[in-house]
Image (cartoon, rainbow, N blue to C red; front, side):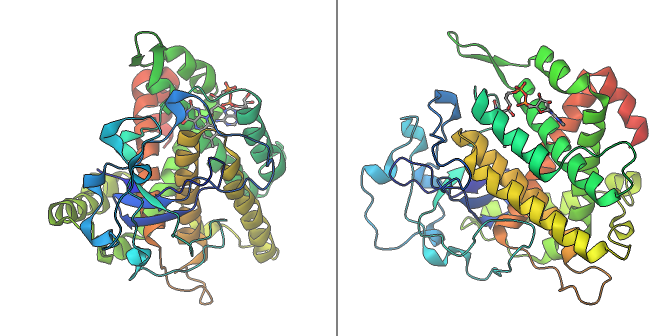
Length: 373
Ligand code: FAD
């Protein structure tokens, strides 16, 4: 599946990542936003962490500004790869027809897409980038210590546990993708699987494997809950063949009888926020998740930021779908998603399912987990 999204470059400094999507296969993101927490954090200088935007010929005609003449700068890829040139001619009206409903779970500002360009995610797979050290560490530390601390063993609050498990599951999934597509030999540019990394970061912690499965089931539930909405959404890619393929793939995903039989209710959202303090707790956890979303602007590696933003937005969309829209509570509005939210949700499900598959195939811990799903 082609997945695209928009980036915005400005004066070679971080200007953050916002999202807009053009269909389930494509979307938009402003990659260079100011990091609100550590403004001194520079951009990644590793070759494997820079993002290649979209080849010009992939940019849907319907999304182009008719009169713009492309300059050399418009078409420059950060990896200097002529196959992956940039088209910065995004029409501001690209997202017309899709609602702009604020998501209380995320920090992204969806209103300004003037700085966005269009990126093919297939040219920028989530994989090992070499991003490590204090910059990466402080993001994870800030996420866990300030926004979703690991619950104490006596902690009864399910909702707080859910937030921790979702983040830990996503973290495990990122680690799995690093291990699944690792730079084994830099000189020979040889990529492959790194079982040691998989074991050291994920498999030897059964709780992380459990959290990965939990996050997968949570997102799967959000997608099945949103299936009517997703089925009726308009997927205009500007390319008729792509549109038909998108619709067919979505249908296969949403109405897969095997999946429905295996997981009739992957996660029961009705059990949460029930106590007296439910509404207050929900606001608190929303605030924490928004902080996590804002932290993604501080990820100092372009490609990691791209995928970090995408997946955190996907989680925010799952949270919105399950807890803030179309629920049984009469006060909640009917579900409405933005294009970028649809793409983030579907891509997150794909990333998580790939991780679950890899863990299942590679590790005994993963194989044991299957019985518990
Ligand atoms: P880290 O993964 O940095 O973990 C830090 C600490 O968190 C660990 O010491 C452990 O105490 C705890 N921890 C680890 N896993 C879990 C878990 N599942 N649940 C709970 N606690 C846990 N690098 C890439 O090469 N490619 C990428 O695409 C990429 N994307 C990233 C996206 C984001 C948003 C961030 C913040 C980082 C990303 N990185 C990426 C960096 C990568 O995640 C690691 O930070 C880096 O590889 C260093 O790993 P580490 O072994 O030091 O432990």
